[in-house]
Amino acid sequence: MKHFSLLDLSPVPEGGTATEALANTVDLARAAETAGYHRYWLAEHHNMPGIASAATAVVIGHVAGATSTMRVGAGGIMLPNHAPLIVAEQFGTLATLYPDRIDLGLGRAPGTDMETARALRRHIAPEDSFPQDVAELIAYLGAARDGARVRAIPGEGTKVPVWILGSSLYGAQLAAFLGLPYAFASHFAPDMLAEALSIYRSTFKPSAVLAEPYAMMAAGICMADTDEEANYLRSSQRLAFARLRSGRPGKLPRPTEDIEAEIPAPVLAQVDHALSCSATGSPATVRDRLKELIDCHRPDELMVTGMIHDHAARLRSFSLAAEVLKGLLVQEAA
Image 1: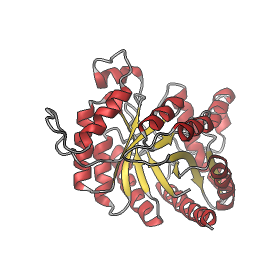
Image 2: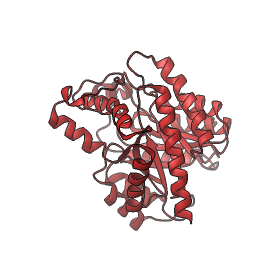
Image 3: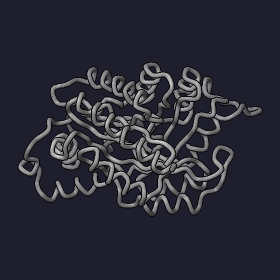
Image 4: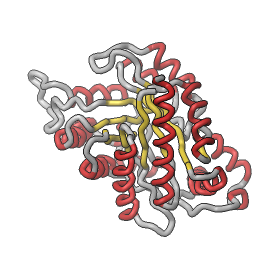
């Protein structure tokens, strides 16, 4: 493992507002930069009361302006929702404002329900044009092309690093074919992680931007001084995910001592499986679990994420995680 990074969804907690959530994101980003996180990604979601990062490029610019060295980017932009030219202009502008600090991760899912997807796109094409759209977008961000009638300005020549994101085998195959870095969403969809990484690494074709495969995996994190406290804090995310799975998305719930009383056992079992690529507990407990995940999957980079209702507790969780991850990096390099 070469780096560790952080994924933030700008969670809106119960009793809080989107204004507070975005302020918390900036606060967390500054703390993450100080703690040594390599990159800070935000994700595109729509029509979700508990997530404030819908206008992802705008939030990325806000975070980049509030920090100075850490890479900031999208994990990711859901490309089917947008014209490639628009994304190239947005991220080309970000790269012009913050040179050599912007990443662009691209996803194939809508990041929302189908009714909202129709509101975003108006006319949903029946064919899957994701590979062609990725290629078009990369071309807009590349060197000036002789005779090009359509250009991204700003954007042209910025060569913003493009990642392919995925939670299945499709993204792994595409990233390998295009010779791009690959990030797997194992923090909520762990089932195909090992197979996707294997396919990506074994079929990777070197490209002008990447000579060998570079794979990132994601893991949930919830840390506190004790296992008991961490498990209590994590109940907020388990509740939120269960409600989302049940068609009742809302703000990030307050933690509970008795989650079994609120969520039916079959639903909770599904949630815990979906969130199983994670580490919850004291520093010692989390260190052992993260080492197990890293040793098993050998990622080039680990991206951690986690939603905690109390902002101060969330800051502390990621601060503790950074210390654990630094120790694992040193151990791996030895």
